[in-house]
Amino acid sequence: MGLQLHRYRLHRYLLGGSMAFLVLLVSFPISAEYADVVLNKRSEKEGMRPVIFPHWFHRIRFRCKVCHSELGFKMRAGANDVLMSEIIDGQFCGMCHNGKIAWGPEHCNLCHSGKPGLKSGIHGGDSTQGPGRW
Amino acid sequence: MRNFLIRLPHAHWLLKGLVVALLTVSVAGAAVIVRHWLTLDKDGLHDPTDQEIKLLQNPAEALSKLPPDEVGNQVNWVKALGEGYINPRTNIYPETKIRVLDKDILLRKTGEMPMVLFPHKQHTQWLDCSNCHEWLFKSKTGATKGLNMFAILQGEFCGRCHGAVAFPLTECNRCHSVPRTVSGAPAKAH
Image 1 (cartoon, each protein chain N blue to C red):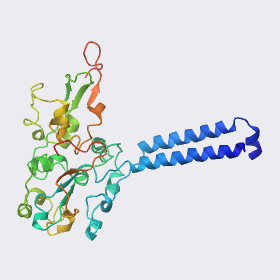
Image 2: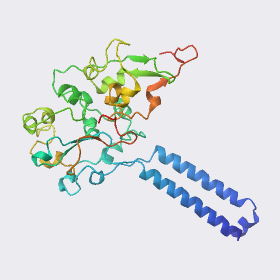
Image 3: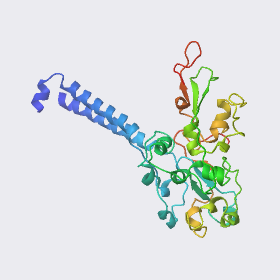
Image 4: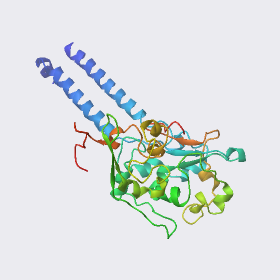
């Protein structure tokens, strides 16, 4: 009898522990990856899906200053009005996405990869959702 | 074994203690070590019906190899760069001058919070001077007006990056890192 009670308590401990563990795992990612940017000012109006720009991927390969100083991207989501014609011309994303450093602009779907209807702005946060102005 | 447990009056406490200790260790370990990234098809942003997203790199593939952090991308980016895990390009144009400044700035007017130590070195390894000066911050110490947490939380000043792409604003003590003594001077020399 006494042992059964112990077992029951042990089960409760284990159950509680594993539930806590699951909650911990699930609570990590909210959605997106921290600092992902959705660009949809023009895309869907022009019949293309929104663009997803992953900061994490790019900062492994380039320091912030390359895009935000040399290429002229302003440090505010939505502040950069970039046209596809400018990219094909070698400006902004087209500085690297030219078939030499990274894939060229003919690979439409690799950048225009977002779900239809997404709002422009910076997404994904493990702690903060980004400042109020975004 | 059963007889042994029944005969020992305090056996259940030993068992309980063991379970609690194991759980504590596993939960504490999980908070530090376990990192989890969503795959692109499940991240809520990418269109999962798109076959071409299989060509894109998933965050876990790259980020799991970098020094851990608990917030943001779950990567300590400063450490990743400083310790050579990554070596991102500094420039595209060959004539671009790479400017790095090793100078700490102590911001003393932080109310009841510890003072803020701003390290130019870690910032200029990523950014160019012109990313912050002279438009967001004046170069002259103390000349920047309106710098406070309300503005930062609204995405101004430090909040341009912190809370969006650099470590989030929940990490108070990483910036507010210099305790104040009774006399108001820094507790340790800088």
